[in-house]
Image (cartoon, rainbow, N blue to C red; front, side):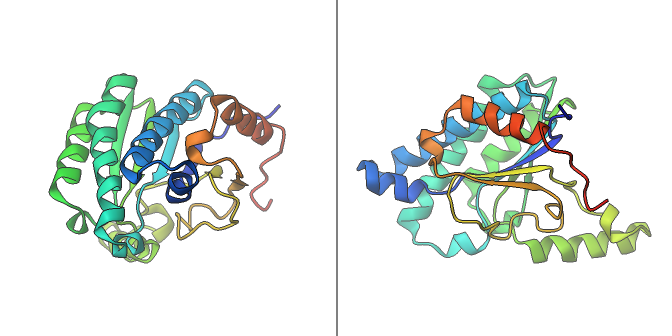
Length: 217
């Protein structure tokens, strides 16, 4: 067996479809999804993962109708303000929001800032991508590299991803960290996020550990 992935990317997709199929309103569907994401994070930490990057919202997602975005924002406030502090040791875990903060509502930002302040450990990092666009990230990295006099590859705030888990069968990254996912192992699931079991996460990591990760070498 090889080492577990150090950095896992999580694309929690399909909650609107799950809501329709199960006749559950969007607010409840997204809140259940927030609880499930925390369960997945806890499992990944237990399995030896050091960093998880969660795709909460792309900037393109912000063009959705208000009645579709408000449940996302409400669940995210619970995620940052209640669920993460309840499940993670602040001396071990840290939280970081990445994306265009100016495009996000103030209650979301206040909850995210609270989590960033409360959880500042160095053992397990949770990156949350919201109002994120890969082109913005590349422009920012290029500017930072110029300021620091370093290579642009060393100027990204988020490092390389080893394993990406998307909870929908569509084989798409949807703009998720394209530079960092160049050699990532990709897993697209038929199981919706809200039906995902912790045992499946165990299996995904075990499957990753069976394969040599050569990164083109």
